[in-house]
Amino acid sequence: MAKRSHTSSSIASSELISTGDSSVGSAWRETLAIRDFGTSARGKSQKRLAQAQVVRAQAESEVITATKNYCVNARAEADDNLQRAELTLSKAERIKADAQE
Image (cartoon, rainbow, N blue to C red; front, side, top):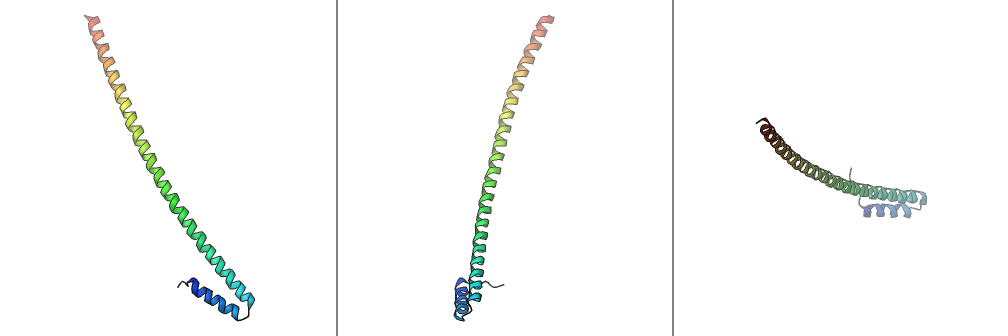
């Protein structure tokens, strides 16, 4: 389906008006206005969709980064707790060995 330019639409519109049929000319102008509005609204919707997709991608990236950071911190804390537990265990084993002697 070939698209008409706005220029050809204006020419066709002026030709209809010049024929003296004002109802046809009026309907034609209304049709052109609705078409332009639909195209404009569609373009705006597509732009908003593209912006929303960018924001979504950024949010996903931030969530992934935050999750990775949380896991790194949790792992470091778990390692610290494990080291303290191992030190406490070795200390308890020494005390037990001393007590048995």
